[in-house]
Structures are given as structure tokens and as C-alpha cells.
Length: 111
Image (cartoon, rainbow, N blue to C red; front, side):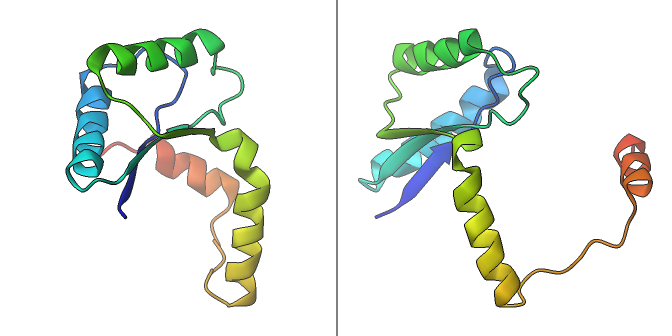
């Protein structure tokens, strides 16, 4: 069974681009009799707010896009860490050799 997901950040209201991505994933799951998951990317603790979570759920309901399960990424950190440890043991990850300063500079560069 196919599983798709929509992972909005609850730091603001949905916009047309969010809805487009959500619709395509929802439509694919529905067309394949699969599962559509709503997974809030709530790791930005300072800007994530319950009002936006409620708004996103309300918008999806209004649009008729039903999801079968919902998760909060922040509540799955232990699962992610366990999987990361497994990848480390299997030697399937590699280190980043850039300093934090170098990474910050790269983030600011516009192409």
C-alpha cells in the first residue's frame, strides 16, 4: 500500500503552494487506495503555534482532504535517533567537515 504525507510547518497559515503539494500527495494516496498522513514539522519551537495547527486541520477539512493519521515531528525524535544510530552502525552516514560558520555563509549565499 502506498503512503504519502503532507508536512506543513505550523508557523503560519497555509498558502497556495502548500495546498498544491498537499493535494497532489492526497490525490496519489486516494487514487491508489493508500494512506495519507499529516505530519506537522513542528521543530521550530519558537514559531510553531497551536493556532496554526488548528488552522491547517480546519483548512484540510474544508478542502475535503481527509488524512488517516497525524504526527508531530518533535514527538518522534527518539525514533529518528534510533534509526540514525542504525545507519551509523551500518556505516551508511558520512560526516560533515564544514564548520558551523561555513554552513551559515552557505545559507546566506543567493544564487
